[in-house]
Length: 356
Image 1 (tube, rainbow, N blue to C red):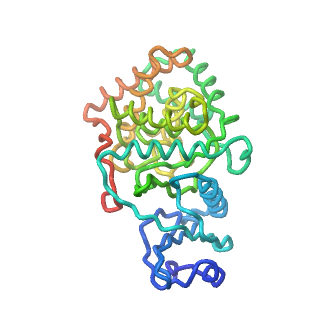
Image 2: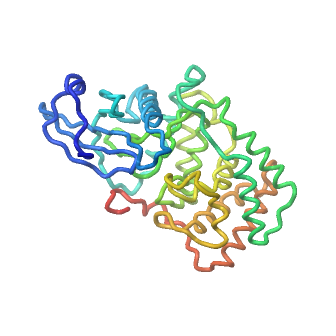
Image 3: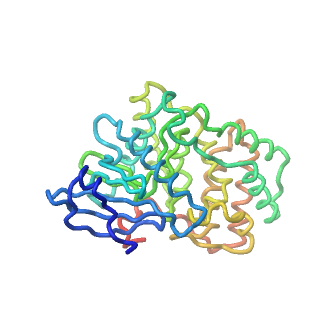
């Protein structure tokens, strides 16, 4: 009975008696139920599983999600995540507040950006060690990116490796301790009457909030539904984020958004879904196959990211060569595959599992 509601006597004592439950769509790494209790309240029950992957550390993901949710629960004013009502660590089960999602709206990004900034601003130096530090690109990622360029006969200036090496140093999360969601994608943001709340904190970490603000520019890199945000909407959401952060912390957002975008560009694993990350060199596949994840292909994602970095680094003090290389590689990819499409615009985002 794999899908039987895991609700033991301790949870019944803490939360109430389950009267009816419905298994909801979720990732292979969890099972999620909407439960009506005997007192008519609705709650969400989530159980972290191994997803069929023997290497997956389900206990770690459970602890990480609970820690992230509890830190997110500090929010004063509108919540930014569901409240944790009870847990059963032995079964990796959490009972969460049920959140009514208002669903589709045309202008979804400003509220998302505000909630993201409010989430990021909840932690600081006193929280060091409460979650793992954000894990960014590595030297192997940088070398794989340069090898990809060479595979398409794009000249790689020697200074490009120096720039990427310095980039990796700048992207080290210390001393940044913002509360990062880890996967702030459409579907993990619920629109409520008092703002956006995020769910699915299995990848929560502490680091620089710019790596998640970069989602708008770089095309939502950990999401199956990659999207493009341009011009006025992009300027608006970034201004909302920065203004919210400043009002909560009293200082400007630290770091360089171009660095954050370049960091996403050189991660081949950001071309595939989570189950396939860390398995092979994804950039090594690109010259011979154009694999698809969600609505777009790997080359379509890559061309978008290359264009973003090229545009942001034309006058950049530390990434000028990387920008020129990105522009040349984007042109070569587009010439080799003229049928490549731009990413879908942000107003085509999905609002339900049925649209995925």
